[in-house]
Amino acid sequence: MNPQFSHKKSRLLYNQSIRCLPGGVNSPVRAFKAVGEIPVFIGRAKGAYLYDVDGNKYIDYVGSWGPAILGHSHPQVVKKVQAAAVKGLSFGAATELELILARLIKKAFSSIKKLRLVNSGTEATMSAVRLARAYTGKAKIVKFNGCYHGHGDSFLIKAGSGSATFGVPDSAGISPNVVKDTISLPFNNPDEVIKIFKRKGREIAALIVEPVAGNMGLVLPESGFLKTLREVTQHYKALLIFDEVITGFRICFGGAQHIYQITPDITCLGKIVGGGLPIGAYGGKEEIMELISPQGPVYQAGTLSGNPLATTAGIANLKILSQSNKIYKQLNITTKALCEEIKEIAVRRNMSLNLSQLGSMFTLFFSKKKVTNYQEARKCNLKMFARYFRVMLSEGIYLPPSQFETNFVSMAHTKRDVAKTLEAADKALRLLKRK
Image 1 (tube, rainbow, N blue to C red):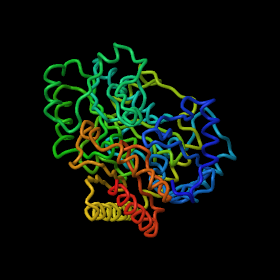
Image 2: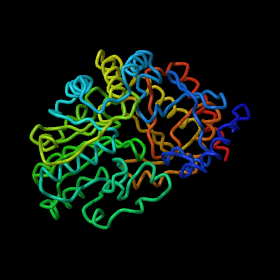
Image 3: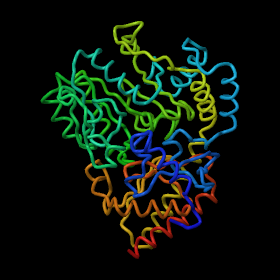
């Protein structure tokens, strides 16, 4: 660690936290175990920067795992939320805000005719799967190794993200019956999809996928992969569920389905939809969504679903994003420039790196070959990544503390921030090459 960066207070808080919280954290990836560090405790955030409790300042590439696309504490969003808070934090009743946010989402996603607001991406994906089973009358779910859809039982069969960080592909406490009804396949392998549907297509209710994987690092779909998923599910009368909790409104206003021109039956959203506050949503065709209670027999409820603070933040966020395509264009230019420069540094330092980028998302893989699935991501040099992370942190660059996560760039990142990041990356790779 850079001696200029003291983490004395963070260490004290962590030692106290482990007496109250499992592992001292409320989400596994925050524990920093994969990078051999204790967690940094954040005190505040503004624009592209985080400030920890010890007063250290960082250029942030986590962005609350995606939603801070405009930068932290955007003044327009904060002002709206403050005004909403004065009126009441939660009513547990219908509000016009829910309708306004729903209309903004429908405007962005042509595949969504009706939707339901929930409290998280996990709630959205769990509800979508239940809905798919009710609509098709079938039980089995197909997912992909390394695609993370939250911590619902069905999704923790060979899951990625937090569990991948610790090398534990499954979670304890999952019923054998759930395992029996969940089929997990390799990402970007259309042949395996075709094979399993030929064998079990009559039993499969839905296939759920991150169209652009963001939880094994950023892994893009290979040409024709998503098209195959759409064709196969249609043929076997199964539903195609796109988990766009990360990609929705992040890579463009209409998500990955707009970029790749694939129309799913159900779309799951989160992150940016809440503008930094907890929210999720799932939606799709009318005939599917009308099965949800109180209109239909599929029960799903939530006291805080569509609460006034989260909907207010989401509305403010989406209105800004919808006003101009220049935002997404600028994000892509900034991110691409950063990534191209890192590639050049790696070549200059004779380091084996592979860099994946789409829009304002990117991942630097410590691998000699392109990463196309979870198995290949697992083969990356995780120790090298951990050393890289520690050097970058000591230089004031805050990265996701796992090789299996995605970096996010915001509109608040400046050319100066990019230049400082590249300077730190050059130093990090130089030090790693020595070892």
